[in-house]
Length: 487
Ligand SMILES: Cc1cc2nc3c(=O)[nH]c(=O)nc-3n(C[C@H](O)[C@H](O)[C@H](O)COP(=O)(O)OP(=O)(O)OC[C@H]3O[C@@H](n4cnc5c(N)ncnc54)[C@H](O)[C@@H]3O)c2cc1C
Ligand SMILES: *[C@@H]1O[C@H](CO)[C@@H](O)[C@H](O)[C@H]1NC(C)=O
Ligand SMILES: *[C@@H]1O[C@H](CO)[C@@H](O)[C@H](O)[C@H]1NC(C)=O
Ligand SMILES: *[C@@H]1O[C@H](CO)[C@@H](O)[C@H](O)[C@H]1NC(C)=O
Ligand SMILES: *[C@@H]1O[C@H](CO)[C@@H](O)[C@H](O)[C@H]1NC(C)=O
Ligand SMILES: *[C@@H]1O[C@H](CO)[C@@H](O)[C@H](O)[C@H]1NC(C)=O
Image (cartoon, rainbow, N blue to C red; front, side, top):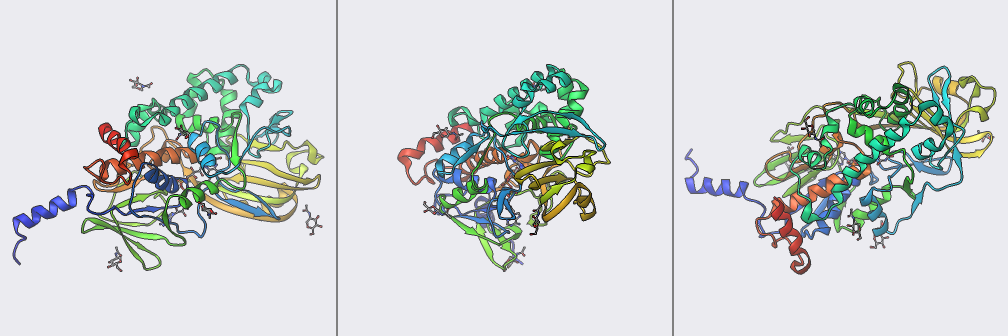
């Protein structure tokens, strides 16, 4: 067969390598309707990106790991439940979408106990929080018992968290002073957070002067609740986890998933529900996405907004990312009554309302909390464990069980130090990966922050002509040219 004429092959190379030009508005396809995918769509529109946006969601609901569960007529968060007061994207989404925030300012208090499998090594009288699996360091610190057991190192733990949260706030700086990041490492280094991913939380807290009692008990209880893992997670994931135990925590009334639903609704998105993408192939200068429904979509830009670790999407050409294991958290919801004898007590009222646990191989669960007291003998509980809870085990812990719901979450990465990161750009063209950032920490807000960066990355790499993809040059031209000046 005759060879392709040189000019044609050159043209072909130019076509495949050239950025998406203004000759047509680029079609963007996003896989996943969680907070990450919804945020990419939102920020693409916010920074004046025209062109169709498709979101594919394999489930029949949007929101991903933000989901509610209804047990005996009451609805509770089943996955991501709490937000930090400085989660500014979530704060803005809530305002923008006219959702209601329910905050942690309540007179109701909750008692905390640390269970080692045989006895409670520690019990507070009360910590003030209405949220179920909520642990207020502020409340803790104010607790005399807490101070007696752990000493003033509690304040050093607080300090460690505050310094980290302050560094994270750099991601909310104005566009002019905030670069677009091509890699997770670069993004973390810029904010001064990278080093925290190279050491364990245990090492960081030891260096910060915390006693091993505080690390092995309180800090461990918190990392187990938030990430299902021990203090051997990275310092950064650990700091984020501990930050989820401060004051002022909040949630979206009616369910955090409404943030994703609302963002998608107002971003002019073609939403494809119950449609799972099974292959992504780059052919003839576009991505071809095939779904389990037998449909095929052409996309100029493709964004993976879900962890790839347990998916078998086939990529052509193949991509390579570091191995990552997801930590599975089994969430079990129970309507009934727990059994005081299991905890060595005579009365139900002796059991702390939040039971945290230390790291021990013979503990069958990570935490149990009361979500709602219907009466003294009828309550709704939420329980986390690393393994599924068997009926036999539940029947030991609960004396009455009218309803049980089990959810197995591929919850968040299994954290290590030093942490390895997948790239934001899965190829040299326009295939992006929001959840590469989850190795830093996995929260609703970190997904939004990573998504905002990806949206800027897409816009800056999609056109050599700054204004060509802007629908309203008067207002948005400056933003896009600034995006370019940053690269
Ligand atoms: C039990 C639990 C508790 C948590 N607690 C908190 C908390 O209190 N606060 C907090 O901030 N964070 C918490 N998190 C973490 C938080 O839920 C996540 O970090 C965040 O929701 C991730 O959002 P995402 O959009 O990146 O991914 P996801 O929410 O996982 O969204 C990915 C979506 O992609 C879809 N999908 C996957 N593959 C395909 C495919 N091939 N085709 C089409 N669609 C596909 C999935 O169905 C899913 O809807 C918790 C997580 C769990 C599991
Ligand atoms: C939130 O909204 C306010 C007001 O519109 C804006 O000034 C601020 O930059 C926004 N914050 C983030 C993180 O986007
Ligand atoms: C991170 O660690 C490197 C190497 O140990 C060091 O040079 C650098 O100053 C540290 N950065 C921060 C922000 O602590
Ligand atoms: C979508 O937004 C419109 C207003 O912009 C609102 O009327 C409608 O209820 C919203 N739909 C959903 C499903 O949120
Ligand atoms: C995707 O679907 C198209 C059209 O049905 C088909 O030609 C193509 O081979 C499929 N690609 C993959 C990787 O299955
Ligand atoms: C369980 O259900 C039975 C029958 O409906 C009811 O009488 C009982 O009060 C319930 N108990 C609890 C703990 O919910």
